[in-house]
Image (cartoon, rainbow, N blue to C red):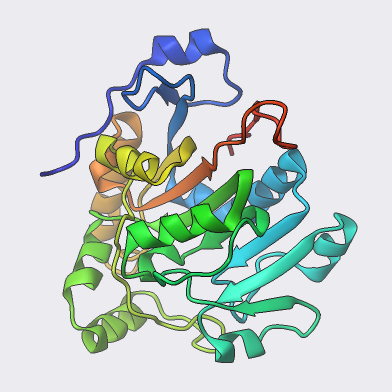
Length: 288
């Protein structure tokens, strides 16, 4: 069954007084007061503003133990930021070789975040990933493991490409050797800094009703879901480049979250009962 975009209610968003532009949706569950903020943005804003938004989240939430999932050779936080904010910061990756390429002043954990026998339990207050979720075969298991590694009240932030954007649908269907060549043709990259890994796109969708329910089924509260429209893969193709830009402009005015290209996702593991958890049940999530 095809997921349907959630019904958007601008009046409710304004009446609720939530910080930032966007739309609220209650995820169809009357028994919870938690509300999801859903926003449509150009993908370039998500890329250009990623580091700034990640740091804003960290400054707003003030976690102590932070996990960089899939950071590998390129940890997302520089050592100076980690020291200044007194973070207990760890880089997690499935590949010992990738971790070995990261600077030596980072704590490193070699672990498969998609494994059924995942062993980390309530290790972190905050975890995040960038362009990692699409490379995990089983999206449900990935999010279950993220849920397990968070402390009660802990927050996860993910940035990933989404189906059913045409380039990623093609990447999903092509043999790996062909998708690697195609990617290099449309978007050449430094292979020493950006490796090409198999992509499965399990549970990597925009903020559709079905996707929100999937995340809730793991136990998460979905706090913020930003659908990014547009991509750079047609930048070298005259004609198609202009058509793509016009389509992006149209989707930003009239969002259809079935065809997002990228997404920001912020979820929380529910805190313990009041009076038991050290983490407040009230949380403020900034929008980019």
